[in-house]
Length: 299
Length: 299
Image (cartoon, rainbow over all chains, first blue to last red; front, top):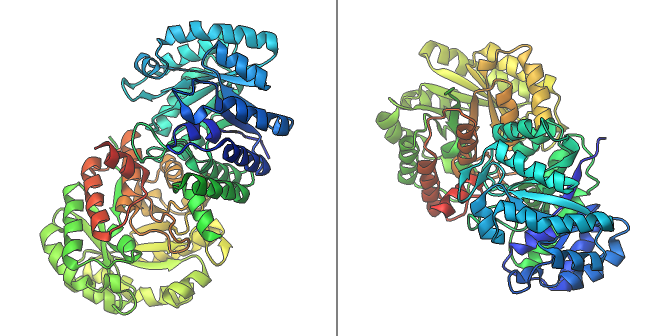
């Protein structure tokens, strides 16, 4: 069976968008259970200012607990918005970090208070240092397809940003369909433009399920050769642009889809469902992943 | 823009699987609002014994209210499990009825207490009479792909049942993926087998979203030429085989997907969202359609 890489973004992208702030011990338990269910790639945390994003305030403590225990079996990454964050991540033992930009000036301005160009200037020292340190850097591009402030985004704009990240030294580009409005035809057009200039093994898709299109978009990307996807357990995180709506595609839906289509994700679905049940209890809320609900109620 | 036919099954397939029994007046209001939102094909009710399915106990009263008012603009259909039901439907003024069978003996036995063969014997008088009366008959096939009791179903079994229904006189076959477990590859294999013997214009797809695969399956069927789909407003109905899980694919998700892919469904999405909001109030429950939730919370 052909392998598909799934990067579990629940501990970072998921928990950052939850109201409840989990204890470091609960986060550790979450990661431990993810590892036990077969997860091999985990975005663990973000090295940001605690006063800005309190959900990620324990980045150092969490990494110090998790990495020595699991880093031999699992690839962990973290967000490093600046060189200070990068140094902390390196100190904690990460072998992979991630930087974050977007296709849209308005979005980049609102999220990291920079222009897209400034974001590259700011990331270059991270890329340079990481190269020396033998640490991989992943480049996130938010708002491919559409931006909550600027509307539709041309594929050429995403291509331009992706090429800059690759030139800077990114080993993988995560294409973030941040607001979850895309349909498969749009994913096809975007990938057609990107694939003229970028080898497919550099590309990852990060879909949100806001309008219920994430699995159809995954099918489209898969049929064009993409073998790397982001998701969060149970759909953890939700959507900051439409209150109560779905955010990240749920790992359960993705694993169900990929496994039934004949791909090997390495993740045990029933075990993952129990991880998300644990998280429902800890966050005192109910997840909306279809596969999670069907499996939970069948057990 | 190419047209796609959507048959709204909320008033029958949806409400039959809801605990709350709506008044005839509320059902009338539901249908009125569906019509106002651009719906052109509605499965209105089922002519069954009231003691068996109390949700459909007002079939005659509802039809008598609805048909004279809306039948000039909208095609209404109803389920007629036997000749008694057929005569009542004809009397009420239906120009289209539907009969119901399945690919699986266990499912047919549990649902209509017949073998698959007996179901055909029982339907033949309906087909014969409908032909004389100039009334169209639609054939539902449940449990294509998989059965809750028998597991995986071979495409050839579905083909056999579909051919019998067409021989009997069905103008359209609704392929019911009753338990919502299918993935696009399975839909592709099923349609490949069917399309060798059946012109595509005779086929409709009826997907359930139990595992979140319905839109991906719709994309697959659409790419193979299917232009007729069933759905229910808000995802009304739920799944009788997994408590709390999703049932019929929501019309909102289907309309969002089709419209954004460039097809004309005739249905106004924002207006339909208000219809489902009305139904949430009447049924005192929350729908799980992703598009419905995103649109509702954005408004």
